Length: 247
Image 1 (tube, rainbow, N blue to C red):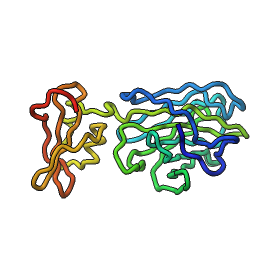
Image 2: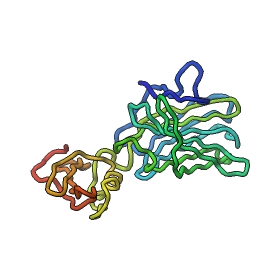
Image 3: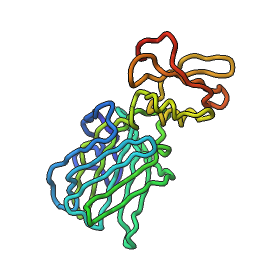
Image 4: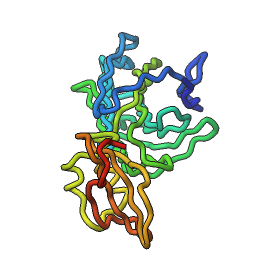
């Protein structure tokens, strides 16, 4: 399965940098840990990677065999089955801080994005942590899962952990009763989808508004949310009447 060719210094000899075989995680996955084999040098040897696709942020933790205060780590977050990814690069600065840069990378371009990426580089624990707000990851639609991968380059060596699809939030693809109870009149549609971990599907339209239908995680009748047709803000919630199975 094709992945985005990574232009510039990250290009791997003999292959496109982001060409890989996708290994999808479970649809309900929220955190996925990926082990990685031994490589050299130790300062560029990923031993494992942990990917967490939360409701508010995508977080990547890279465990390195012998991390030093040099090199750079790149966390990739993309839409599954797509050649478009966000590339979050982090590196240690001489003053002890950590530099960050987020770029949108396609098969033909690379462009910077303004975003409050957070990062930590710990030689003591040999870990690098990267955290990207979901609000910075724009793919033209709400995604119930993201493709996530991490790479490192240091002391002339390179290594990359296996990339996987990680389900977003606590209940990707369906809404729980607790999540529905957490909604409030006036919530934006974007906030609703982030809290429910799904965009659902269009239900029907009405004078001045419309509804969307969300599969129930517990089975049975799905949930509906009525939205104002002008502001896309929540007006009411409830169970779909007459439906006995999930949609």
